[in-house]
Structures are given as C-alpha cells and as structure tokens.
Length: 49
Image (cartoon, rainbow, N blue to C red; front, side, top):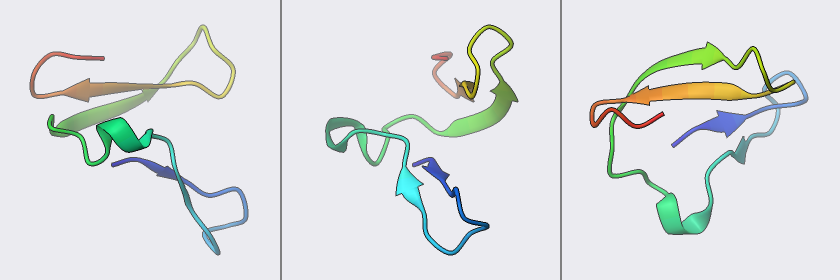
C-alpha cells in the first residue's frame, strides 16, 4: 500500500482505493511523474505502472 502525508508525517492517508488495498502486486520502485503535477509512477513485480 502507498500512503501520503501532508503534515510532516503526523497523519497518513492511503493513495489506493479499498478495492485494491492491499495490492496483490509488490511495489519495486517509485518515481515522480513528469507529466502530472503531484503524480507518482509505481513499478511493480508484474510490470504494472
């Protein structure tokens, strides 16, 4: 699962929806999405992004 904090880590919210949490795929890498402000690209062991 991926989480985001907007207050220095005092609280966190999931970036995933309930239907996909926890993810069946393992996350292997994260990168900033250069085309979407605030976006994140997630690489998985099944090749999904």
